[in-house]
Length: 298
Image: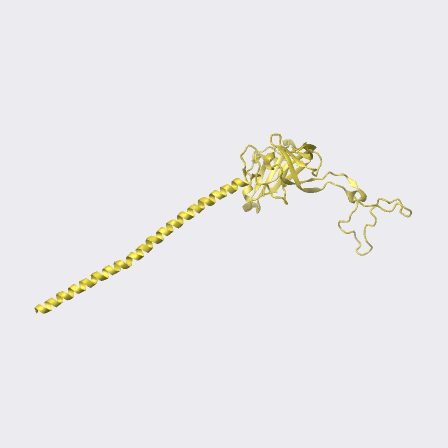
């Protein structure tokens, strides 16, 4: 699980592809998106990265925030977001992310605050059909009708579709495709529309329902750094596996040599015993012969 990005919505335009077709895209700006804090599994119970983007004037930030940014040697930022990541995708504090974090053709999920449209009636807000425009309806054609029941239950159920504030809600659109990315200017072009007005903040993450491309940078697309890919990580793992296999083979060879030496020793041990027993038999025969000679002489 990789980190996401904090981007600012600039507006919409169109891009022409190689085959001549044009694609409506949303232009997102990525500037000064840096890591300001890390949360580890040991200390906090989970792994995450806190990103901050957009320069803020020191006079417009409170004292505690100024001290927090000064502690990590980063200028004050306007927007902060926290992204859950896996342990191997943790990013050092102070690192700046670039537009090459997402690969062209990759699918992402965008989360933002929708455009607020103020107080709206039930027909506009929930697409109601309204009341009958005939006799008997006393100038209440656009009302939402009855609100609740009688004495039982004697209240209005939660979630009742009524008039109220329209928009200004956090919404996520999934499976949006990255059409292009300009690393030098810090621009990302996403196919289709995104929630939010011009100048609003949007968070981009790897699509949950789509696989992450193999050529995506790991742990993230960092500015001014050589980012490794998943294949590079796999190759390193394969090299480690090969070296470990070689070590295992060497250990097995050494074990076999030790076993052979032990078997040779075991094989030699009975021959030595036989030789000792033969020598003892010869000594016993010699003693018998000497004793026989003495008896004959006597």
